[in-house]
Length: 174
Figure 1 (spheres, rainbow, N blue to C red):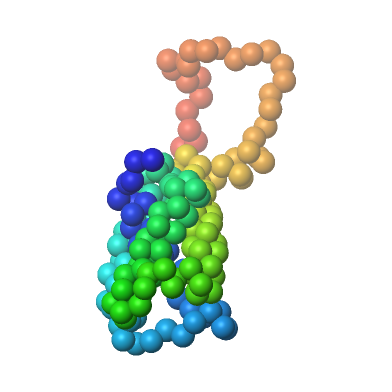
Figure 2 (spheres, one colour):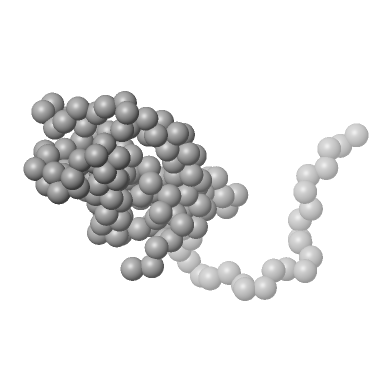
């Protein structure tokens, strides 16, 4: 697994969203401002970076979209490290994390957020492809042209065009 910058950018925002989801579940644990004060700054940094990564993936026509296992795995690792660091900052044992329901809700949230992020990027890539085809000069009237095309049945026409036309365009009489 080779980490790409786009994957890392999506992991950062996904981890923060999954973290917020884990603490939003009733009975999962209470978020204290003392340990989660850094999340506002982290979110302000992660959102634009993730948007740039999404634009890069769209410009690459979807090449490099992280696999679900890759995205969810990275988010889970970052989430566990984040929760362990928060516990250490509060003076608690990192082992106490295993008994806390916020860990298990957070792991579930990380997988859910990774799946939703990947799905939304894939849908965005498909939409961008469709819009590119629709706005391409040759494809602007593609549907109308396909519906109005008249098929000729009969003898085939010559492959080479006539050097001189036998009839000129109409000229108004003065």
